[in-house]
Amino acid sequence: MTIAQPRTRPNSSTREHRALALAEERFEEIAASHRGGLYTVPASGGGSYDGTYTRDSESCSCKDWQFGHTCYHVMACAVVRAKTSICSGCGRRFRHHDLVELHEDNHDNLTYFHGDRLCPACADNAGVFGRAS
Image (cartoon, rainbow, N blue to C red; front, side, top):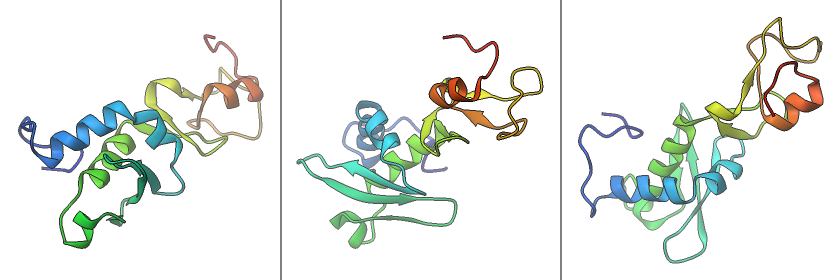
């Protein structure tokens, strides 16, 4: 079992369910807050927590985490990270399907390499050919 994909369908009272609901409802906000593995995750009672989710570490500034539990804020970060990639141009996170992968037939810019992924704005700025608007 991984945090991003629980083995069973969670019931409505579990942290996993709360994480999936939070990631679904506030996906764009959490993704836009990404700063090198750090995320600002909205709290259920207002405000927010600083969550970290990287290959090497997980943490959160909430009380659940301080008491040794894997909180739903970190799980929401895991869901957002699993469904997004980083734009090679601006460094922000975008859903996989929103990024344009560069290959030899769609760009002539020496700034980027084949295989780089660009968000729509960076793709437009780089003059990527054949991108559907």
